[in-house]
Image (cartoon, rainbow, N blue to C red; front, side, top):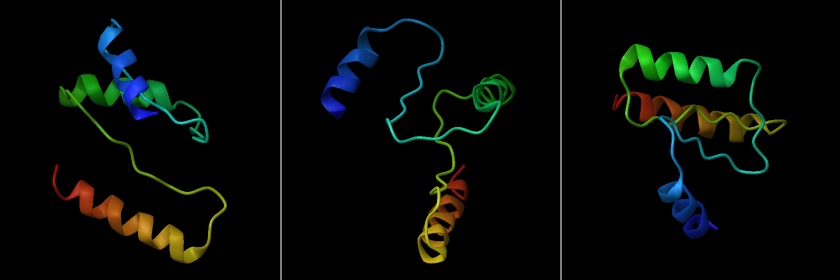
Length: 74
Protein backbone atom coordinates (compact mmCIF):
# COMPACT_ATOMS: atom_id res chain seq x y z
CA UNK A 1 0.00 0.00 0.00
CA UNK A 2 1.12 3.54 -0.65
CA UNK A 3 0.68 4.50 3.00
CA UNK A 4 3.17 1.86 4.17
CA UNK A 5 5.60 2.68 1.37
CA UNK A 6 5.49 6.40 2.19
CA UNK A 7 5.96 5.74 5.90
CA UNK A 8 8.99 3.58 5.13
CA UNK A 9 10.34 6.29 2.85
CA UNK A 10 10.16 8.85 5.64
CA UNK A 11 12.18 6.61 7.93
CA UNK A 12 15.00 5.74 5.56
CA UNK A 13 18.33 7.47 5.11
CA UNK A 14 20.52 8.04 2.09
CA UNK A 15 20.80 10.48 -0.75
CA UNK A 16 18.37 8.89 -3.24
CA UNK A 17 15.18 6.97 -2.58
CA UNK A 18 13.64 4.87 -5.37
CA UNK A 19 10.15 3.37 -5.14
CA UNK A 20 9.41 0.39 -7.41
CA UNK A 21 6.37 -1.84 -7.72
CA UNK A 22 6.69 -5.62 -7.83
CA UNK A 23 5.84 -5.80 -11.55
CA UNK A 24 8.46 -3.28 -12.74
CA UNK A 25 11.08 -4.42 -15.26
CA UNK A 26 14.14 -2.20 -15.39
CA UNK A 27 16.54 -2.01 -18.32
CA UNK A 28 20.20 -2.85 -17.85
CA UNK A 29 22.06 0.06 -16.25
CA UNK A 30 18.88 1.81 -15.06
CA UNK A 31 20.19 2.78 -11.63
CA UNK A 32 23.52 4.01 -12.99
CA UNK A 33 21.70 6.22 -15.51
CA UNK A 34 19.28 7.43 -12.85
CA UNK A 35 22.06 8.51 -10.51
CA UNK A 36 23.99 10.13 -13.36
CA UNK A 37 20.94 12.24 -14.35
CA UNK A 38 20.26 13.20 -10.73
CA UNK A 39 23.80 14.50 -10.36
CA UNK A 40 24.10 16.09 -13.80
CA UNK A 41 20.75 17.91 -13.65
CA UNK A 42 20.80 18.49 -9.88
CA UNK A 43 17.36 16.92 -9.46
CA UNK A 44 15.39 16.60 -6.25
CA UNK A 45 12.67 14.38 -7.72
CA UNK A 46 12.19 12.45 -10.93
CA UNK A 47 9.77 10.08 -12.63
CA UNK A 48 10.97 7.78 -15.43
CA UNK A 49 9.09 7.08 -18.62
CA UNK A 50 6.54 4.33 -18.34
CA UNK A 51 6.74 1.70 -21.05
CA UNK A 52 4.32 -1.24 -20.76
CA UNK A 53 5.89 -4.64 -21.39
CA UNK A 54 4.20 -6.91 -23.91
CA UNK A 55 1.14 -4.72 -24.36
CA UNK A 56 -1.03 -3.69 -27.30
CA UNK A 57 -0.11 -0.91 -29.69
CA UNK A 58 -2.97 1.19 -28.34
CA UNK A 59 -1.79 0.92 -24.73
CA UNK A 60 1.79 1.69 -25.73
CA UNK A 61 0.52 4.73 -27.64
CA UNK A 62 -1.42 6.01 -24.61
CA UNK A 63 1.66 5.62 -22.42
CA UNK A 64 3.79 7.35 -25.06
CA UNK A 65 1.39 10.28 -25.15
CA UNK A 66 1.45 10.74 -21.37
CA UNK A 67 5.25 10.37 -21.29
CA UNK A 68 5.54 13.21 -23.81
CA UNK A 69 3.02 15.27 -21.88
CA UNK A 70 4.93 14.88 -18.60
CA UNK A 71 8.26 15.62 -20.31
CA UNK A 72 6.85 18.90 -21.66
CA UNK A 73 6.54 20.18 -18.08
CA UNK A 74 10.25 19.79 -17.28
